[in-house]
Length: 96
Image (tube, rainbow, N blue to C red; front, side):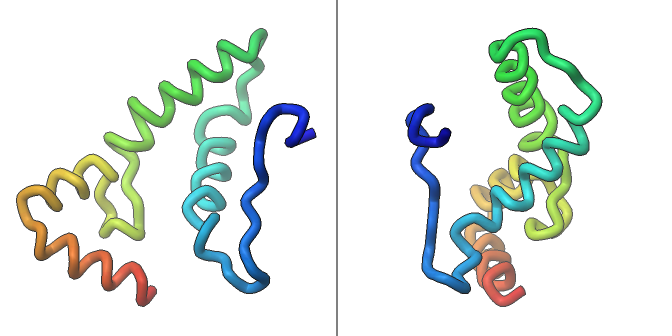
């Protein structure tokens, strides 16, 4: 099914969970917070709704524990103003 739709599955070595950890966190959030209670008539409607969720809620407003309970956009804005703080936060995230 994946190959039929031009999708390449991401596979890492056994025991290496880091390559997909962000997506493994994102998809349950998307399902429970947005699409679980909806029925889409077309694939285009589904795509537009997922895009809206990511661009209007998930990135600008949803707080992420791995980012110190700020949104990704807030985290990036702080990183521009405080590059040293970003380095410290990144090091902390790798340790946790």
